[in-house]
Length: 339
Length: 288
Image (tube, rainbow over all chains, first blue to last red):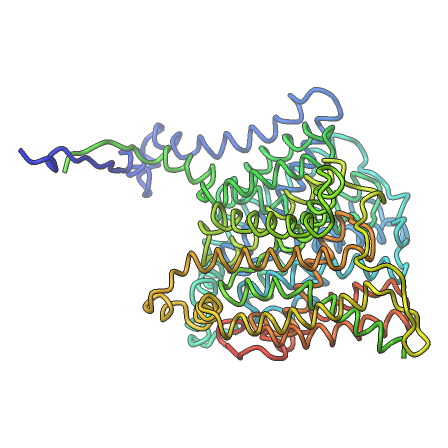
């Protein structure tokens, strides 16, 4: 008997029901349909039920903030893991969308429900045009330049004393009612989530992922990668601007703090915790992180310490994230085999 | 004339901010976003060594530098080594460290005007009709000496040569028996010590405030990007370019624009020539 005989290893095998429900034949059985629909339905129904089960207006407001951050995290995840552009400038999108919506609302007198969509589209254009010169940059260079954009705009507004300067723009209308606010952002989040999930599986999404994996090959196939990157940045920044426009109307104030680092860092932390590249993961990450950070509000800046430590722990020790782990448990089982 | 004098002082200060960042990036390709945090942290360590533990001033400076070097090495050994080579994770992880340190200091009550370090030599003199404190002259002199010492260190000592070998070609260095992980720890400790050195030199000119951590980081990045990431002499030259540009804008436009200049320099350099003024051109690595 040698000692190597008792060595074991863990193997992972797809569950039978997962394999059966992969193809079109899932439609043949209710069980397999339920297996497919259950997680998605859980997410949709769970999110839609959240405002109803929350005690009091304060926690309902927290749910809206969760959705705002989830939109940002979604835009970060899409841009970083499906196009290969790591943008550390979530605050840039929020700031542009927020200020635009504030201007539409206060200076031009547009109602809230018109100002938000207008700011989304216009903000998408503004961000794309401003980022256009940076699109050829790769990796760390693009990350640094996007990190600098919101800081730059904030300093310019401060130095030139335009757009209300350090006081910001006040007197912005709020949403017509609290229910419109909550369900508005919730439905927008769900629509964006499933739209992006669908988008990355279309032909366009295929090209975008190819740009991420090997841009030279895409270029060699006679496709203009700058064109595709610009399109992706437009989509992502429009989602970010939408979040910014919503948050300005929730707080009824737009100031330099919309360019704050919170909007850049928290969505990234949520993406890392939730599971990078899953699109749903960032939303779940926000659902965990934002309420925790609200609970710690009494401790002041300690909450930033707290979530940066969570971020550090996850990125160095558990970089797969909650969602990837959950997906694996749902679709596969593990067992020990002897070798 | 005052533009010339204060421009030089500002440029040397910028070079001191940036040297540690440039060193770490040059050797292990690690964008150390915790640089500004280490700068502020070492200021507070020096302050508490002096005021809480009652050490004398030179000793507390040495203590601050040693402790900061150890902290830098620990950050690398515990966290950053695990994400080595994944650029974006490196940025996010080191930035998370920076946030934790800076906001932790803020939470710990280190804010307000009460935290100052005394100048090495107090008083001032007049050069060509402009009054300049002795501390600023000390900064310029020590800054020049430091650059010279660094050059000697990297050209004539075994560790310095090993570090340069790593910077030039990590694989070849590995084959020649240079342990790249050990060298990266050394580089990080050295970079942190340079940050601490800059802190104890420059902080006597003002208060120790947490916010300066973010500004130092931005200025260090600005200098390194304009000079070319990984090029040390480029960083020194870029410090002079940005330093004089900042003083000129303060004199002719307004002091609000000092940070705008640095940020604009970063954005313009990255758009026009990402490898910076003196970096080696690596066209395919940085843009398509």
